Image (cartoon, rainbow, N blue to C red; front, top):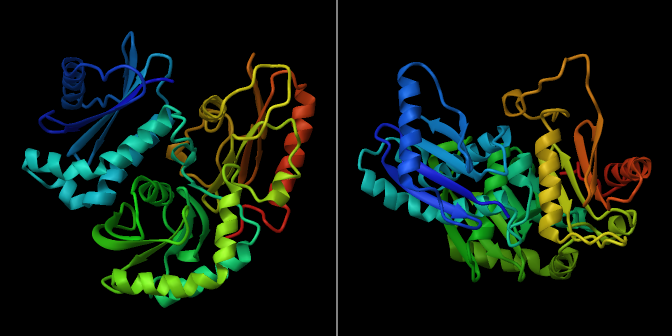
Length: 418
Protein backbone atom coordinates (compact mmCIF):
# COMPACT_ATOMS: atom_id res chain seq x y z
CA UNK A 1 0.00 0.00 0.00
CA UNK A 2 1.44 3.36 -1.06
CA UNK A 3 1.60 6.33 1.28
CA UNK A 4 -0.34 9.52 0.61
CA UNK A 5 -0.18 12.87 2.42
CA UNK A 6 -2.37 15.96 2.15
CA UNK A 7 -0.97 19.32 3.27
CA UNK A 8 -3.05 22.48 3.57
CA UNK A 9 -1.29 25.84 3.46
CA UNK A 10 -2.34 29.46 3.64
CA UNK A 11 -1.61 30.58 0.09
CA UNK A 12 -0.36 34.05 0.94
CA UNK A 13 1.99 33.15 3.79
CA UNK A 14 2.72 29.45 3.33
CA UNK A 15 1.73 28.80 6.97
CA UNK A 16 0.65 25.14 7.38
CA UNK A 17 -3.03 24.71 8.26
CA UNK A 18 -3.08 20.91 8.57
CA UNK A 19 -1.28 17.72 7.56
CA UNK A 20 -3.15 14.42 7.03
CA UNK A 21 -1.43 11.15 6.19
CA UNK A 22 -2.53 7.66 5.14
CA UNK A 23 -0.48 4.54 4.51
CA UNK A 24 2.92 3.41 5.81
CA UNK A 25 5.67 5.72 6.98
CA UNK A 26 5.47 9.35 7.97
CA UNK A 27 4.59 12.51 6.03
CA UNK A 28 7.51 14.40 4.45
CA UNK A 29 9.30 16.86 6.67
CA UNK A 30 7.82 20.33 6.64
CA UNK A 31 11.24 21.75 5.69
CA UNK A 32 10.90 19.93 2.33
CA UNK A 33 7.32 21.06 1.84
CA UNK A 34 8.26 24.62 2.79
CA UNK A 35 11.14 24.65 0.31
CA UNK A 36 8.92 23.41 -2.50
CA UNK A 37 6.24 25.91 -1.54
CA UNK A 38 8.88 28.60 -1.89
CA UNK A 39 9.51 27.38 -5.44
CA UNK A 40 5.74 27.52 -6.07
CA UNK A 41 5.54 31.12 -4.80
CA UNK A 42 8.62 32.13 -6.81
CA UNK A 43 7.07 30.68 -9.96
CA UNK A 44 3.78 32.48 -9.37
CA UNK A 45 5.59 35.79 -9.03
CA UNK A 46 6.98 35.19 -12.54
CA UNK A 47 3.71 34.06 -14.10
CA UNK A 48 4.46 30.33 -13.81
CA UNK A 49 2.16 27.92 -11.96
CA UNK A 50 3.70 24.79 -10.43
CA UNK A 51 1.15 21.98 -10.95
CA UNK A 52 3.25 18.94 -10.08
CA UNK A 53 6.80 18.00 -9.30
CA UNK A 54 8.84 14.98 -8.28
CA UNK A 55 11.64 14.26 -5.87
CA UNK A 56 13.62 11.05 -5.56
CA UNK A 57 11.07 9.58 -3.16
CA UNK A 58 7.76 11.29 -3.89
CA UNK A 59 5.49 13.08 -6.35
CA UNK A 60 3.74 16.36 -5.48
CA UNK A 61 0.53 17.80 -6.93
CA UNK A 62 -0.35 21.43 -6.18
CA UNK A 63 -3.61 23.39 -6.42
CA UNK A 64 -4.43 26.89 -5.12
CA UNK A 65 -8.06 27.78 -4.47
CA UNK A 66 -9.48 31.31 -4.45
CA UNK A 67 -5.98 32.72 -3.83
CA UNK A 68 -6.48 31.62 -0.24
CA UNK A 69 -5.92 27.89 0.36
CA UNK A 70 -3.16 25.84 -1.25
CA UNK A 71 -3.42 22.05 -1.11
CA UNK A 72 -0.54 19.69 -1.80
CA UNK A 73 -1.02 15.97 -2.43
CA UNK A 74 2.13 13.92 -1.85
CA UNK A 75 2.40 10.32 -3.04
CA UNK A 76 5.13 7.71 -2.80
CA UNK A 77 7.56 7.53 -5.70
CA UNK A 78 5.84 4.43 -7.15
CA UNK A 79 2.78 6.52 -8.14
CA UNK A 80 3.09 9.14 -10.87
CA UNK A 81 0.94 12.25 -10.40
CA UNK A 82 -1.76 12.65 -13.05
CA UNK A 83 -5.09 14.42 -13.68
CA UNK A 84 -6.79 12.06 -11.21
CA UNK A 85 -4.73 13.58 -8.40
CA UNK A 86 -5.80 17.08 -9.42
CA UNK A 87 -9.44 15.99 -9.25
CA UNK A 88 -8.77 14.42 -5.86
CA UNK A 89 -7.45 17.76 -4.61
CA UNK A 90 -10.63 19.42 -5.91
CA UNK A 91 -12.60 16.93 -3.80
CA UNK A 92 -10.44 17.71 -0.79
CA UNK A 93 -11.10 21.43 -1.11
CA UNK A 94 -14.81 20.77 -1.69
CA UNK A 95 -14.77 18.73 1.54
CA UNK A 96 -13.63 21.83 3.40
CA UNK A 97 -16.32 23.94 1.73
CA UNK A 98 -18.93 21.27 2.54
CA UNK A 99 -18.45 21.71 6.28
CA UNK A 100 -17.18 25.30 6.60
CA UNK A 101 -18.71 27.24 3.70
CA UNK A 102 -16.68 29.01 1.05
CA UNK A 103 -16.69 32.49 2.62
CA UNK A 104 -15.73 31.16 6.04
CA UNK A 105 -12.90 29.17 4.49
CA UNK A 106 -11.38 31.79 2.23
CA UNK A 107 -12.06 35.15 3.86
CA UNK A 108 -10.66 34.57 7.35
CA UNK A 109 -7.55 36.43 8.43
CA UNK A 110 -7.10 34.60 11.74
CA UNK A 111 -4.97 31.57 10.88
CA UNK A 112 -5.29 29.93 14.30
CA UNK A 113 -9.07 30.13 14.16
CA UNK A 114 -9.10 28.70 10.64
CA UNK A 115 -7.00 25.76 11.83
CA UNK A 116 -9.60 25.00 14.52
CA UNK A 117 -12.50 25.40 12.12
CA UNK A 118 -10.97 22.89 9.69
CA UNK A 119 -10.63 20.09 12.28
CA UNK A 120 -14.20 18.72 11.84
CA UNK A 121 -13.26 18.06 8.19
CA UNK A 122 -10.44 15.67 9.15
CA UNK A 123 -12.64 12.54 9.10
CA UNK A 124 -13.78 13.23 5.55
CA UNK A 125 -10.28 14.15 4.37
CA UNK A 126 -8.88 10.98 5.95
CA UNK A 127 -11.51 8.87 4.22
CA UNK A 128 -10.55 10.31 0.86
CA UNK A 129 -6.87 9.68 1.60
CA UNK A 130 -7.65 6.09 2.60
CA UNK A 131 -9.40 5.65 -0.73
CA UNK A 132 -6.36 7.06 -2.49
CA UNK A 133 -4.10 4.39 -0.96
CA UNK A 134 -6.63 1.55 -1.39
CA UNK A 135 -7.00 0.88 2.31
CA UNK A 136 -8.91 -2.36 2.87
CA UNK A 137 -11.21 -0.45 5.26
CA UNK A 138 -12.16 2.21 2.69
CA UNK A 139 -12.43 0.62 -0.73
CA UNK A 140 -14.33 2.50 -3.40
CA UNK A 141 -14.11 4.36 -6.69
CA UNK A 142 -16.33 7.45 -6.40
CA UNK A 143 -13.33 9.73 -5.82
CA UNK A 144 -11.88 8.42 -9.07
CA UNK A 145 -14.95 8.36 -11.31
CA UNK A 146 -16.68 11.48 -10.00
CA UNK A 147 -19.88 9.46 -9.71
CA UNK A 148 -21.88 8.28 -6.70
CA UNK A 149 -21.30 4.68 -5.69
CA UNK A 150 -24.55 2.74 -5.90
CA UNK A 151 -26.17 -0.52 -4.93
CA UNK A 152 -28.47 -2.23 -7.42
CA UNK A 153 -31.40 -3.61 -5.34
CA UNK A 154 -34.05 -6.07 -6.59
CA UNK A 155 -36.99 -3.92 -5.37
CA UNK A 156 -35.95 -0.57 -6.79
CA UNK A 157 -39.49 0.57 -7.67
CA UNK A 158 -40.79 -0.07 -4.13
CA UNK A 159 -37.96 1.90 -2.53
CA UNK A 160 -38.28 4.74 -5.02
CA UNK A 161 -42.01 5.08 -4.39
CA UNK A 162 -41.57 5.16 -0.61
CA UNK A 163 -38.68 7.60 -0.86
CA UNK A 164 -40.74 10.04 -2.95
CA UNK A 165 -43.55 9.95 -0.38
CA UNK A 166 -41.12 10.38 2.51
CA UNK A 167 -39.41 13.36 0.83
CA UNK A 168 -42.77 15.01 0.23
CA UNK A 169 -43.71 14.45 3.88
CA UNK A 170 -40.60 16.27 5.14
CA UNK A 171 -40.98 19.03 2.52
CA UNK A 172 -37.72 18.16 0.78
CA UNK A 173 -37.16 17.48 -2.90
CA UNK A 174 -33.61 16.22 -2.34
CA UNK A 175 -33.55 12.86 -0.55
CA UNK A 176 -31.97 9.43 -0.83
CA UNK A 177 -31.57 6.05 0.83
CA UNK A 178 -27.98 4.96 1.53
CA UNK A 179 -26.30 1.82 2.77
CA UNK A 180 -22.67 1.81 3.90
CA UNK A 181 -21.97 5.04 2.04
CA UNK A 182 -23.57 3.82 -1.17
CA UNK A 183 -26.75 5.16 -2.72
CA UNK A 184 -29.64 2.71 -3.00
CA UNK A 185 -32.28 5.13 -4.25
CA UNK A 186 -32.54 8.88 -4.79
CA UNK A 187 -35.04 11.51 -5.86
CA UNK A 188 -34.66 13.38 -9.13
CA UNK A 189 -33.40 16.49 -7.31
CA UNK A 190 -30.80 14.40 -5.50
CA UNK A 191 -29.42 13.17 -8.81
CA UNK A 192 -29.34 16.75 -10.11
CA UNK A 193 -26.56 17.55 -7.62
CA UNK A 194 -23.09 17.99 -9.09
CA UNK A 195 -20.64 15.14 -9.51
CA UNK A 196 -18.59 16.45 -6.60
CA UNK A 197 -21.57 16.75 -4.27
CA UNK A 198 -22.73 13.23 -5.12
CA UNK A 199 -19.31 11.89 -4.22
CA UNK A 200 -18.95 13.78 -0.94
CA UNK A 201 -22.40 13.45 0.65
CA UNK A 202 -22.34 9.61 0.89
CA UNK A 203 -18.78 9.74 2.21
CA UNK A 204 -19.81 12.29 4.83
CA UNK A 205 -22.65 10.04 5.99
CA UNK A 206 -20.27 7.08 6.13
CA UNK A 207 -17.73 8.98 8.27
CA UNK A 208 -20.25 9.90 10.96
CA UNK A 209 -21.50 7.55 13.67
CA UNK A 210 -25.24 7.84 14.14
CA UNK A 211 -27.28 6.26 16.94
CA UNK A 212 -30.77 7.08 15.66
CA UNK A 213 -30.57 10.40 13.80
CA UNK A 214 -28.34 13.40 13.14
CA UNK A 215 -28.89 17.00 12.07
CA UNK A 216 -25.82 18.35 10.25
CA UNK A 217 -25.41 21.82 8.72
CA UNK A 218 -23.68 21.52 5.34
CA UNK A 219 -22.86 23.70 2.34
CA UNK A 220 -23.20 22.29 -1.16
CA UNK A 221 -19.85 23.20 -2.81
CA UNK A 222 -21.37 23.88 -6.24
CA UNK A 223 -25.06 24.56 -5.62
CA UNK A 224 -24.88 26.56 -2.38
CA UNK A 225 -21.33 27.20 -1.12
CA UNK A 226 -22.30 30.00 1.28
CA UNK A 227 -25.87 29.25 2.39
CA UNK A 228 -26.14 26.08 4.51
CA UNK A 229 -28.69 23.28 4.29
CA UNK A 230 -29.63 20.92 7.08
CA UNK A 231 -28.71 17.35 6.26
CA UNK A 232 -31.06 15.14 8.29
CA UNK A 233 -29.93 11.53 8.59
CA UNK A 234 -32.18 8.87 10.10
CA UNK A 235 -31.12 5.26 10.66
CA UNK A 236 -33.75 2.88 9.26
CA UNK A 237 -31.91 -0.40 9.92
CA UNK A 238 -28.42 -1.35 11.06
CA UNK A 239 -26.89 -0.35 7.70
CA UNK A 240 -29.59 1.66 5.90
CA UNK A 241 -30.19 5.41 6.29
CA UNK A 242 -32.66 7.95 4.92
CA UNK A 243 -31.07 11.32 4.11
CA UNK A 244 -32.86 14.57 3.31
CA UNK A 245 -31.63 18.10 2.64
CA UNK A 246 -33.97 20.55 4.36
CA UNK A 247 -34.40 24.15 5.43
CA UNK A 248 -35.28 25.31 8.97
CA UNK A 249 -38.13 22.77 9.26
CA UNK A 250 -38.96 20.05 10.22
CA UNK A 251 -37.31 19.49 13.57
CA UNK A 252 -35.18 16.40 14.16
CA UNK A 253 -37.84 14.96 16.49
CA UNK A 254 -40.52 15.41 13.82
CA UNK A 255 -38.46 13.74 11.15
CA UNK A 256 -37.69 10.74 13.38
CA UNK A 257 -41.40 10.29 14.00
CA UNK A 258 -42.22 10.63 10.31
CA UNK A 259 -39.49 8.21 9.29
CA UNK A 260 -40.84 5.56 11.68
CA UNK A 261 -44.35 5.76 10.22
CA UNK A 262 -43.24 6.12 6.58
CA UNK A 263 -40.76 3.26 6.38
CA UNK A 264 -42.38 0.73 8.70
CA UNK A 265 -44.53 -0.87 5.93
CA UNK A 266 -41.43 -1.68 3.86
CA UNK A 267 -39.14 -2.71 6.72
CA UNK A 268 -38.63 -6.19 5.26
CA UNK A 269 -37.55 -4.67 1.97
CA UNK A 270 -35.03 -2.49 3.80
CA UNK A 271 -33.71 -5.50 5.69
CA UNK A 272 -33.31 -7.45 2.45
CA UNK A 273 -31.05 -4.73 1.05
CA UNK A 274 -28.37 -5.63 3.57
CA UNK A 275 -28.09 -9.10 2.01
CA UNK A 276 -26.57 -7.42 -1.05
CA UNK A 277 -23.41 -6.69 0.92
CA UNK A 278 -20.60 -6.95 0.00
CA UNK A 279 -21.47 -7.54 -3.67
CA UNK A 280 -23.72 -4.45 -4.15
CA UNK A 281 -25.64 -6.23 -6.89
CA UNK A 282 -29.08 -7.87 -6.83
CA UNK A 283 -28.91 -11.69 -6.82
CA UNK A 284 -30.75 -11.84 -10.15
CA UNK A 285 -27.93 -9.93 -11.81
CA UNK A 286 -25.14 -11.50 -9.80
CA UNK A 287 -26.14 -15.01 -10.87
CA UNK A 288 -25.77 -14.02 -14.55
CA UNK A 289 -22.15 -12.87 -14.23
CA UNK A 290 -19.60 -15.28 -15.67
CA UNK A 291 -17.45 -17.20 -13.15
CA UNK A 292 -14.27 -15.88 -14.78
CA UNK A 293 -15.08 -12.36 -13.54
CA UNK A 294 -13.27 -11.64 -10.26
CA UNK A 295 -13.95 -7.91 -10.03
CA UNK A 296 -15.73 -5.16 -11.92
CA UNK A 297 -16.42 -1.43 -12.09
CA UNK A 298 -19.31 -0.03 -14.14
CA UNK A 299 -19.72 3.74 -14.56
CA UNK A 300 -22.68 5.61 -16.04
CA UNK A 301 -21.52 9.20 -16.54
CA UNK A 302 -24.89 10.51 -17.78
CA UNK A 303 -26.60 9.54 -14.52
CA UNK A 304 -23.54 10.10 -12.31
CA UNK A 305 -23.61 6.55 -10.95
CA UNK A 306 -21.09 3.75 -10.57
CA UNK A 307 -21.30 0.25 -9.13
CA UNK A 308 -18.35 -1.94 -8.20
CA UNK A 309 -17.70 -5.40 -6.86
CA UNK A 310 -14.33 -6.78 -5.77
CA UNK A 311 -15.72 -9.69 -3.74
CA UNK A 312 -16.29 -12.18 -6.56
CA UNK A 313 -14.48 -15.47 -6.00
CA UNK A 314 -11.55 -16.52 -8.10
CA UNK A 315 -11.38 -20.05 -9.48
CA UNK A 316 -7.99 -20.40 -11.13
CA UNK A 317 -4.56 -21.84 -10.56
CA UNK A 318 -3.02 -18.42 -10.08
CA UNK A 319 -2.64 -16.99 -6.55
CA UNK A 320 -5.91 -15.23 -5.64
CA UNK A 321 -5.99 -11.47 -5.19
CA UNK A 322 -7.48 -10.00 -2.01
CA UNK A 323 -10.09 -7.26 -2.25
CA UNK A 324 -7.59 -4.43 -1.70
CA UNK A 325 -5.36 -5.69 -4.54
CA UNK A 326 -8.38 -6.09 -6.83
CA UNK A 327 -9.42 -2.52 -6.06
CA UNK A 328 -5.87 -1.29 -6.65
CA UNK A 329 -5.73 -3.12 -10.00
CA UNK A 330 -9.00 -1.58 -11.21
CA UNK A 331 -7.90 1.88 -10.03
CA UNK A 332 -4.51 1.60 -11.74
CA UNK A 333 -6.13 0.64 -15.04
CA UNK A 334 -8.76 3.38 -14.72
CA UNK A 335 -6.06 6.00 -14.13
CA UNK A 336 -3.98 4.83 -17.08
CA UNK A 337 -6.80 4.24 -19.60
CA UNK A 338 -9.78 6.48 -18.83
CA UNK A 339 -8.89 9.97 -20.02
CA UNK A 340 -5.58 9.28 -21.74
CA UNK A 341 -7.30 6.73 -24.03
CA UNK A 342 -11.06 6.42 -23.50
CA UNK A 343 -12.93 9.69 -22.99
CA UNK A 344 -15.79 9.83 -20.46
CA UNK A 345 -18.70 11.30 -22.45
CA UNK A 346 -20.37 13.40 -19.74
CA UNK A 347 -17.43 14.74 -17.72
CA UNK A 348 -16.06 18.27 -18.32
CA UNK A 349 -13.16 18.15 -20.82
CA UNK A 350 -10.76 19.88 -18.41
CA UNK A 351 -11.10 16.93 -16.04
CA UNK A 352 -10.12 14.37 -18.67
CA UNK A 353 -7.65 15.93 -21.12
CA UNK A 354 -7.28 13.69 -24.15
CA UNK A 355 -4.17 13.53 -26.27
CA UNK A 356 -5.91 11.61 -29.07
CA UNK A 357 -6.71 12.83 -32.55
CA UNK A 358 -10.45 13.62 -32.71
CA UNK A 359 -10.93 11.22 -35.64
CA UNK A 360 -9.59 8.33 -33.62
CA UNK A 361 -11.99 7.33 -30.85
CA UNK A 362 -11.10 3.92 -29.34
CA UNK A 363 -13.85 1.95 -27.64
CA UNK A 364 -11.96 -0.94 -26.03
CA UNK A 365 -8.67 -1.57 -24.29
CA UNK A 366 -7.06 -4.16 -22.06
CA UNK A 367 -4.17 -4.45 -19.64
CA UNK A 368 -2.42 -7.74 -18.94
CA UNK A 369 0.01 -8.42 -16.09
CA UNK A 370 1.38 -11.48 -14.31
CA UNK A 371 -1.30 -11.08 -11.63
CA UNK A 372 -4.44 -10.13 -13.56
CA UNK A 373 -6.08 -9.01 -16.78
CA UNK A 374 -8.45 -6.05 -17.04
CA UNK A 375 -10.65 -5.53 -20.08
CA UNK A 376 -12.09 -2.03 -20.54
CA UNK A 377 -15.10 -1.31 -22.75
CA UNK A 378 -16.76 2.00 -23.61
CA UNK A 379 -20.35 2.18 -24.78
CA UNK A 380 -21.72 5.68 -24.25
CA UNK A 381 -22.56 6.62 -21.51
CA UNK A 382 -20.92 3.58 -19.88
CA UNK A 383 -17.42 2.45 -19.03
CA UNK A 384 -17.03 -1.12 -17.86
CA UNK A 385 -13.79 -2.45 -16.37
CA UNK A 386 -13.68 -6.18 -15.63
CA UNK A 387 -10.91 -7.95 -13.72
CA UNK A 388 -9.96 -11.48 -14.78
CA UNK A 389 -7.35 -14.08 -13.75
CA UNK A 390 -4.12 -13.66 -15.75
CA UNK A 391 -4.45 -17.00 -17.55
CA UNK A 392 -7.78 -16.19 -19.23
CA UNK A 393 -7.31 -15.71 -23.00
CA UNK A 394 -7.97 -12.12 -24.04
CA UNK A 395 -10.52 -13.10 -26.70
CA UNK A 396 -12.58 -14.85 -24.01
CA UNK A 397 -12.26 -11.79 -21.77
CA UNK A 398 -13.67 -9.62 -24.56
CA UNK A 399 -16.69 -11.87 -25.09
CA UNK A 400 -17.43 -12.03 -21.37
CA UNK A 401 -17.10 -8.24 -21.08
CA UNK A 402 -19.59 -7.72 -23.93
CA UNK A 403 -22.03 -10.12 -22.32
CA UNK A 404 -21.62 -8.52 -18.87
CA UNK A 405 -22.24 -5.03 -20.26
CA UNK A 406 -25.49 -6.26 -21.80
CA UNK A 407 -26.57 -7.81 -18.48
CA UNK A 408 -26.17 -4.51 -16.63
CA UNK A 409 -27.53 -2.13 -19.27
CA UNK A 410 -30.46 -3.93 -20.90
CA UNK A 411 -32.42 -5.40 -18.01
CA UNK A 412 -35.15 -3.99 -15.79
CA UNK A 413 -32.58 -3.25 -13.04
CA UNK A 414 -30.08 -1.43 -15.28
CA UNK A 415 -27.85 1.09 -13.58
CA UNK A 416 -29.08 4.01 -15.71
CA UNK A 417 -32.44 4.18 -13.89
CA UNK A 418 -33.12 6.93 -11.34
